[in-house]
Image (cartoon, rainbow, N blue to C red; front, top):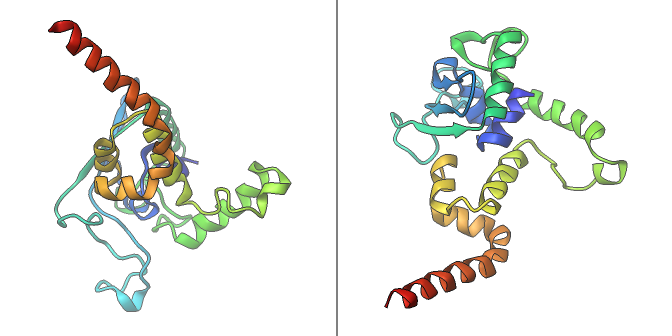
Amino acid sequence: MAFYGVLYYAGLRPAEAVGLRLPDCRLPEQGWGTLTLRETRPVSGKQWTDSGERHDRRGLKARESDTDRPVPIPPVLVAILRAHLKEFGTAKEGRAFGNERGGVVGSSTYWRVWEEARLFALPPDRVESPLAGRPYDLRHACITRWLNAGVPIAEVARRVGNSPEVIHRRYHGCIDGHEEAANAKIAKALEEEGDAT
């Protein structure tokens, strides 16, 4: 649950969640916390990595290898992570998520669990639909929710590790309906400006 929670509430990519370590988590007893992302663990296959491991160890996408990305997380996710760590502890290398042997969580594992969960979570007529078809869709849902809540595109982009241009291009459909709200704000500012003169 906590693995999917960091995708849904913090907009992490699955490979970023796999690489998340306890020292990178600030989880206060109350209020907002922070996840400081430092590495990603994409599945590359042993033959394609320098280490010979199945999961490559890389810096964050589209950033210098030594750059981190702090992501504020809401109290609901702080509570989910605290409960997860209390029940399961950490995996090898202090990672927040691990497989049954403490190793890196494989993409086949979180995909399989996701497919099984969809059968329980969705009405039968929606199971065959593309709705929430893959774990990565939780990240998309997070970004859409933030944009619809009025979080500026630049801030959403900073939190999820994309450029504002990518956010605008990819999610323009969810913010197109905000034109009237934007017009109202501009009109109000113009009225206030007119009143001041």
